[in-house]
Length: 93
Image (tube, rainbow, N blue to C red):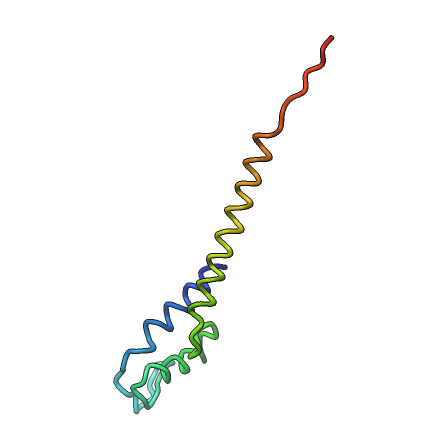
């Protein structure tokens, strides 16, 4: 699940500023755009990978990843506290 947030942001950061050679003849390539702009390439990628888009969601994705990490850490701490607080009861006979 967290991989999708990482993937969306990193693909956007990698392809947004890059210029490509324009593809004029559509062959077997699923991404063929008559433009060299990175945002046009991202829109073409969106057709085959809906996760990738032209919209920059890096900050939102980073916050989501941090929240996921904090929640898992809190669950771990709660589990450790629960395990260490359990005490065996002895019956005195």
